[in-house]
Length: 402
Ligand code: ADP
Image (cartoon, rainbow, N blue to C red; front, side, top):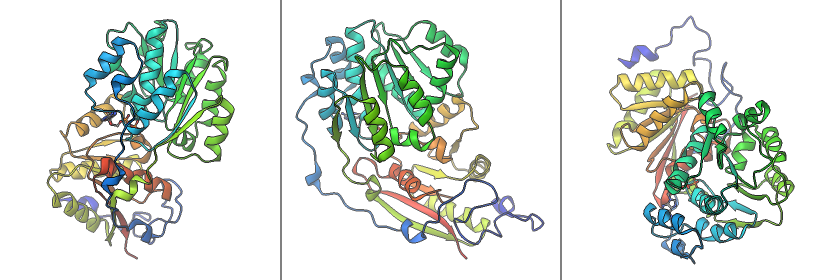
């Protein structure tokens, strides 16, 4: 059935026949770095148990508002993760903090606990949290809500692709907590619907990804609106390169730096390539991987929105429980697809790079690069999603045979 779908008529010039090299720039889609396919093949490293971290604090040790302490207890985590254990005490003291950590390390609670504690103790205080993607901003809000219920605090979620009306209404209530993506936050500053002169806490999550996505000017414009005096800043980044360092140096004051990076999460991923010679062959090889393991949870990357739409349609026609996420979908559609993936109602998510950034989904077993990533750092970021929490994951990269 899928054969015809992938059979390209010969009177169309740029439909794969001419793409001899796996990552030569296609006629559409982004420019790509050349990556030697050998770099997509690597055995997973088996972690030693000796890596186990012993926290210095328990959640009960943190000196927070009793109502917040109760919510933390109800959240049910046994003990603080390394980044939480090390950052929360400094955050509670009011220090500026730099957290160097991969995704999935528990960063959200590491900043949410001290920030929300401050907001609960000072009803006039205000905090802003910036994240690179709508999904990540939404996930941060969801995590904060578990600690905020019945606190009397207001929040606003300012993300692109979501209705302005709701955001304007939420802003009218003078929220204590604003969470959003830099582009939409900047829009509100320009419209005058958001003022930041009375904000004293700022969190930048995944600074490196925000810079990769070209948000530097928006971020600076936003940070400039928050008075430096009395400002407490948190910066989180998986990498500290000169761009990240410059931004932090400019906007922080005597920061304490905590690194919990234990090496690449990609180390935990068994990596291999899948050779294909024709688009029909490509989809049947994908099918082989998808049916090889019944309990798999698979994130598939493809290049453009159209590619993602088409692949998702084909997988559904083949009977797979798949959905998709890309920038052309509404926020509601993206959220629904992500929730279904999280709750295992579907086990395959087809995505573009941008839409998949910042997604935190537990238990992804396989990452499939149905088309090669733009750069090696994108590759590492993609496949790191499969090796979470010490489990071995699998990453397959499709390469066209010459
Ligand atoms: P990050 O922001 O570093 O990507 P998150 O804060 O989203 O990571 O946390 C990743 C996952 O771990 C989430 O599902 C979260 O609920 C869970 N988590 C956070 N803190 C703890 C903890 N102390 N113990 C166990 N699980 C935790």
